[in-house]
Image 1 (tube, rainbow, N blue to C red):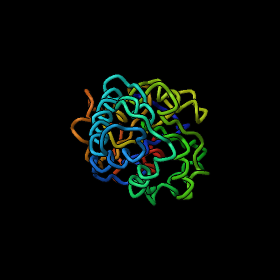
Image 2: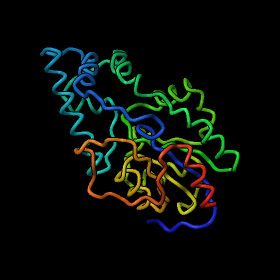
Image 3: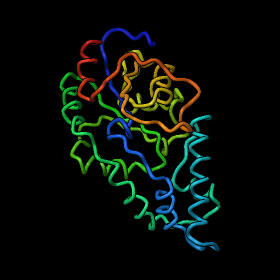
Length: 238
């Protein structure tokens, strides 16, 4: 476990499976939705879908093993396919039902800010910032975020310490021992945060696919069985 002491300056959150409820994903359907954006392909839709599915496994494998970030455009490049970004509507529509912000987020974030604690987001994602900001804006919590980092904009993904450092910088926090990270993954979120010097709170609601489990599972400093538990945990550390 990490050994931070004293007050807490910032609490930074994972997005998928933490700020949103965990859902099982039909990755075949996801890749089929992505394939709608392919242009000038010499093969049918199912072939494009298969290539995109395999490219996705490669890109997320690089994230897991080498903390290498990627974008949606990189996914198509890996698949050897050209795409039109304006044709990605079907892809984002596929994900829409999985993007709802947990109702406990707003009161939790308000409580943290009332205590003078910064609220941040750090997400491993291939999506652009505008997509995530749109979901937060839709759900009425965007004004409660002091800073956010999306791995599609930087060179690294969690669990790289540089990703956590970027998130701390986004909220104006300088001392990792005074920061907390909240996430649903014992590798990316718990081990990664602690390796970067932060305390880690695990939200154990997600069924992480075996191929996404990293080489180490951290032991969290605390467990939040509901997001609302995070406030009491942070109060105990403050």
